[in-house]
Length: 276
Image (tube, rainbow, N blue to C red; front, side):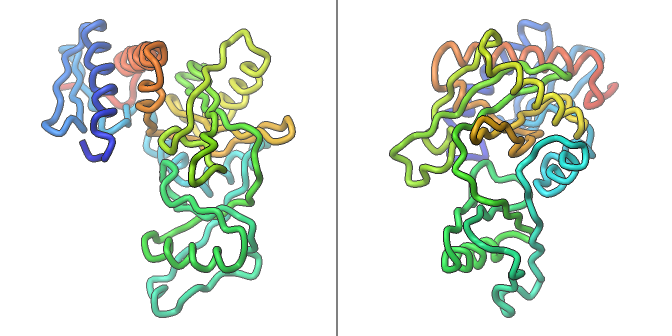
C-alpha cells in the first residue's frame, strides 16, 4: 500500500468501501489497495492514494507548490506564512551550498512540493542551515524556506465545496524528537473543534477563503495561530485522515461520513468523473 503505514491505510479502504455501499456505488481496489475504481453504473472515477479528483489540475498544482500557494494567497490579501523558493542547480553537488545572504536562520527548510512533514527541518543557526541544505538539495530540485515562529497552535480545516466539514486542532506530543511540529504522524493527537465553539467560525472562514482562492473543492487547510493571529500555513489537495481516524471510534465515524459526502459530490458535479 505504498507506505510504512499499511495497517492504517486499511482504515481508509474500509471507509471508502462502506461509503460506496451506502451510496449504491461499485468499487474495486487494485491489489495494493492504492487505486480505487468507483462507478455508479453510468459514470466512473478513480481515487488514487488519497486524491479524489474533485480538484482540477491547476488547483491541485497550486496547492502542491508551497511558494505558489503563498504567492496566490498573499496577493489576495489572505494571511499566509511566507514561503520563499530556493532552486537547486543541476551541478549542486560539485558547487556546494549557494544560499543567498538573505537566507538567515532561524528558519524552516522543506521540500517545496509535498512532504507530509517529511524532510521539514528546523535551522536554528548557520551550521544547521548548511547541513540541512546539503542534505535536502541532494534529494530535491526545489526547496522552500519560511521564517520560524513558535506557533501556539495548529489546526486542520477540511473544506468540501466551500464549506468547512471538519476542524480539529493538532495537539503536540511533548516527548517528540521534533517538539515544534504538530503532525499527527509524528505523535500529535487531534482535538475536534465543534461548530458551537468560538474558534470554529474564524478558522472555517479563513480556510474557505484560502481554498476558494486556489480553486480547491476538496482540501485540507492547515492554519497556525500565534498571539491570537491565525495564518494559513499550507493548503493540501491530497491528504490523509488515517491518523485522525485511528485516534478514536468517533473520529473514525467522522472521517467515514466525510468520505461519503466527497463520493456523493464526485457523482453530482465532479470534473474528475468521466463517461464510460
